[in-house]
Image 1 (cartoon, rainbow, N blue to C red):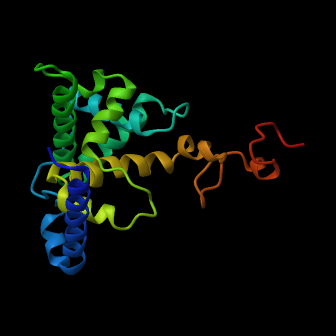
Image 2: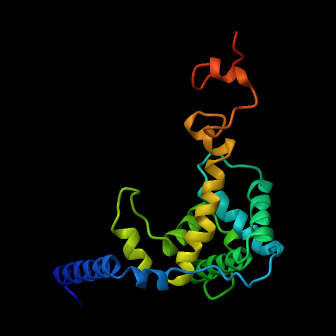
Length: 203
């Protein structure tokens, strides 16, 4: 059995070496980062794949601020119908989520990510996506060297766009007490005369 000290030293050495490689060889980063397949046809996801991607979106949002089902559905369709390569990435993401779900909870049987409970969905995402503070500059770079191609693509082309779409919407801005995205006037101009968080009509 490896000792704790040996494990920590080895882990620190590997992390340092990976970080150094990332810093020194920017061309290597370009080779590692997944690229969109621009030759892949446009289209829409099959129903089961869409169900899993919508479940992913619902897992990413803040509790109590879940948008209606067509929120992510319509966004994904717009992406896959207009952006070459995105249909393929959403399909691969759904397959990755399902495979990870089956590995963790299927006991040898196929399992759909959308059929998991919230905590189990979180566990699937934690298995594929590294977790780190937004202020951490090293770990995200190491992730790009150590994570699988599909895990990186899941973050870059699926999770990040879903999160951005959510936080640019009224549902995301409601979390911080706003009704619209900065630079976009709200439907009700009287909102500017109210105190933050006040939903009443201004006098």
